[in-house]
Structures are given as C-alpha cells and as structure tokens.
Image (cartoon, rainbow, N blue to C red):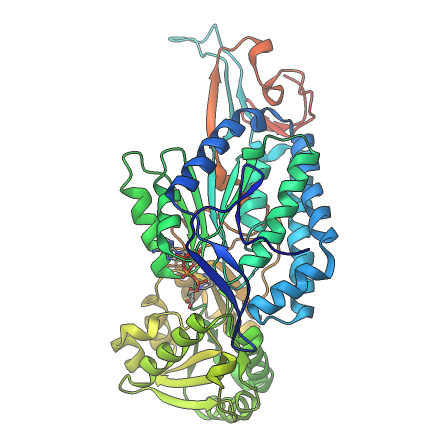
Amino acid sequence: MSLHGKSLIEGTPLPTSTKTFTAFDPRKGVSLEPNFHEANAADADVALNSAQAAFAAFRQKNSGERAIFLETIAAEIMALGDELLERAHQETGLLLDRLTGERGRTVGQLRLFAEVLREGSWCDVRIDTALPERTPLPRPDLRRILVPVGPVIVFGASNFPLAFSVAGGDTASALAAGCPVIVKGHPAHPGTSELVAGAVIKAAQSCGLPPGVFSLLQGSSHEIGTALVRHPKTRAVGFTGSHRGGRALLDAAAARPEPIPVFAEMGSLNPIFILPGALQERGAQIAEGLKNSITMGAGQFCTKPGLTFAIGGTDLEAFKSTIEPAIRSVAPGTMLHPGIRDAYVSSVNAALNTKGVNVLARSHAEADAGLTQGQAVLLDVSSDTFLAQPCLREEIFGPAGILVEARDMADLLQVAESLNGQLTASIHGTEADLDGAQELLYVLERKAGRLIINGFPTGVEVSPAMQHGGPYPATTDSRFTSVGTAAILRWVRPVCYQNFPAAALPPELRNENPLGLMRQINGKLGRESV
Ligand code: NAP
C-alpha cells in the first residue's frame, strides 16, 4: 500500500496545504518518502464540525455496538500486517520485535475497552429512589450516570508510535466513552499514523458510523495542535510528550472563553530508593536491574528511572563498582529522532556542567550523531548538590540516570520531600527496611501515582488497577490515568436525571436493569432491579 501523505478528514484523504514535511529514518540519517501535507486551521474546523455532527449519532450507539467498533479497529490494524511494523521501524528506529509487542498491546487495549463496554458498570450508575413521605421535605427520584463529553483531541507520543499514538490508549478510551476523536499525528511517524488512521476509518465504515467519528490531522508545527485545542467544539484533550508541549496546550485550553480539560502526561524522573538492608543483601542484583531499566529502549520511556537514592558507605561503593561496568557495556542506542537526540545530549551536558556532578559510568563506545545514537550515562552527586541544584530534578529523556548519595535516613527523607510530582516511585528494601520506612512511604504516596516495592518502573501493565498519572508536573490532572481501563473516566461527565419517567431514561438507569449492570441503589451495590 503506498502512502498518500494527506490528512484523513471525514474518512477522506485531503491534500490540505501545499506546505509539506517528511519523516526521517533515524538509523540511516535520511528522509523518507512521501511528502506529508501540513494541516491548517481550516482543516481543524472541518474536522471539528464533522466530529460534532457525528457525536449525536455515535453516542446513540449502544455499548455493544461501540465494543464491535473497537474490536474491528483491532482487526483492521492486524490486517495491515508487516507493512505497518516496517514503516514504524523506519520512522522510529525501534526494533521489529519491540514494535510487534507494541502492536499486541495496542490491539489488546482496544479489545480490553470492548470488554469494559460489554460489562457496562464503568458508567457508575447511582440511583436514589424517591422518598415522597420524607419530612420536612420529600426526596425526589435521582439517577446519575456518566456521559461522553464530545469531540476529543489526541496528541500521539513519539516514543510509542502504536500504543500511545493514533489508535493508542487515549483514542481507544475516548471512543469507548462515546467521544469522536481527532488525532494530531506526531510528525516523527506520519506514515505509521496514516496507516493506522486508515484502519480506524475502515472500521468506522464497516460499522456504519458517521465519518466524523475519527479524523487524523498531520502536521509538524505547533499551529495545528493549538488550533485544535482552541476550537470551540473541542471538549477535552489527551496528550503524551514533553513538559513544554503539555504545558502550552494546558495554558491554551485554560485561556479559551470556555476552558476545557487537558489530560497531559509529561514525563517523570521515577525516583528509586535503595534502603540499606537491600543494598547490602542484593546490591549487585539491583544494579543489574537498574542498568536495564535506565537503558532499555535507549531510555525513551516516561517511566525510566532518572533518579536513584541510597545512603553512602561500603555497600554503596560495592554497588557503584557493579553498575559501572554494566553501564559501560551498553552500546549507544538509536534514538527516535534527531530532535530527541539533540535534547538528550544537551540535557546530559547541562547536568554535567552543574557543580558537584560527576560521571560514574558511560557507554564504552561513542554515540554516532549521524545514526541518531545516544550514549548511556550514570551520573553521581551528593544529596547536598541534589538539593541545591533544581536543574537535576528535570527529566533527561534518554539512557541517563543520576545516583544521589545521602548521608542517612533523615537525609533520604529530605530529598524525597524535595521531589516534584512523579508517575512512579520505587523502594528496594528488606522486610526490616520496609518496617522502618513508613514515613518515606507516606512522603512518596504524596508525590507519585504508582508506588513499587522491590521492582522497577518500566513496563506499565494495561489493566483495571493501573494508575499512570501523578501530581503535576508528571501530569496535569493526577486524579486520572492514561493507561488502563480507568482511562475512560477522562472523557465523561456525570449527569443526574431527576424525576424522569421510565420511558425517557437511558436503559442503564431503568428500574428493571435491562443491561444487568452493577449499580449503586440507595447506597448499596448490586445488580438487582429497583
Ligand atoms: P513533544 O515535543 O511534546 O510533541 C508531542 C506532540 O505535541 C507533537 O504532536 C507536537 O507537535 C505537539 N506539540 C508540542 N509542543 C506543542 C505546542 N507548544 N503547541 C502545540 N502542539 C505542540 O514531544 P516529542 O516530540 O515526543 O518529544 C520531545 C520531548 O518530549 C522528549 O525529549 C521528552 O523529553 C519528552 N517526551 C515525553 C514523553 C512522555 O512519555 N511523557 C514521551 C515522549 C517524549 P508539533 O511538533 O507538530 O507541534
């Protein structure tokens, strides 16, 4: 299948402007065919108007019909076969094995949301039946349910060209909720985006859905993304990427005459605390795990551990002498695109130019800029330097980590307290360590969305209990997650129906419970009818 290089609006490839950009093969350092047309504000307007028009029909579809749509998207993505994987490999440098796994995750989460829809209880039905005899005032009949907000804009991430992009978690959860989606494609993988968007559109057609239910707008400048966020018909935004990008979109959404929510996942330092007993008992094993977690996928994960804290002493010296050769043996890895590689090199240099920062270890081989490579590096600082230098609390996106040496447990608590909001925080400890670490746990619970004991943060399960979101600046709204089935809750709002006649109620709220949902009736959970 040859790529047309156009945005897909109302199910049709549209040439949009004559301004174009190309994808880039980071492994070879060359541009890729074809030219992609930049979408503009007029295209955003067409896409939003048709999304708004589609919303009424789409939200009328019942859960079973939306589930079939999600499963059909999954089947159409699989039907793209190796062509999709090969294009994603060319555009990102990610290995085919990794991309095969990521495709599995992408179709898996579409199918998981189909299951969520069929089970149905996600819409959180609460029914308080009328109490006409209550004094001094009678209680009306109240029935509350979550309803979709309307058209959602999704900004795909560069580091997951399938699972956090065109048909990734944000799109799957928004479509599951009943919201039309417009994706602003990431300019680093436009061909991959076009292929996946074609699959979504084919699925929408075969499910008889209106064409405005999904559009892809291609672009390599901030203007198109900003125009989409500012458009009056946009109801919410999902974003994964840099802090600067997420913050700009949050501010643009807040400055609208009618502000809208922006759910931006903007990265994290994912601190790891190695407590003394664990350091002594299994320092070498932790060093191996840490090296893998920092350098896997050239460190291009929002859950990469950027900071590790431990108390100085002979056990920490032994840990350092184990991790130093491990990091040295890591070959420089291909990064996603030259912009990310350049940002990585300058962030590492900025850290290195900070007083008190030393190199503990780095890849033995030099990175080749022409092949978009990044060299693994582990830096070493004292807790005093860490506390004095706020720049060390900024994410370095790539295979870099900082080891912070504390004096004692009180010092560890102080550095923990100084941290910003995080996606994750991990503790390595023996049972005795953990018994004495309650205060540290309380601090970290305030700082992070996911707490991990004796493990590493990379690898995010897509499941009902997952929380991928933490206090600002990790995300813009720590009450929600961008991974797992609870992600659907970002795209809905509660509505209460008061004293409605049965025939005018949605089926979920009717007395007889025709969908067999788990509901809260007069404060008690159950599947009974009212
Ligand atoms: P990015 O620069 O934030 O871009 C993500 C998306 O947002 C792109 O579609 C980009 O499109 C758009 N965008 C960015 N800034 C914008 C603005 N001010 N106004 C409107 N749209 C904007 O992220 P990236 O290219 O993937 O990577 C750059 C850096 O992001 C990395 O070095 C890393 O620090 C971080 N990152 C974080 C994560 C994470 O999981 N949180 C993932 C990947 C990258 P345009 O370029 O077309 O405007």
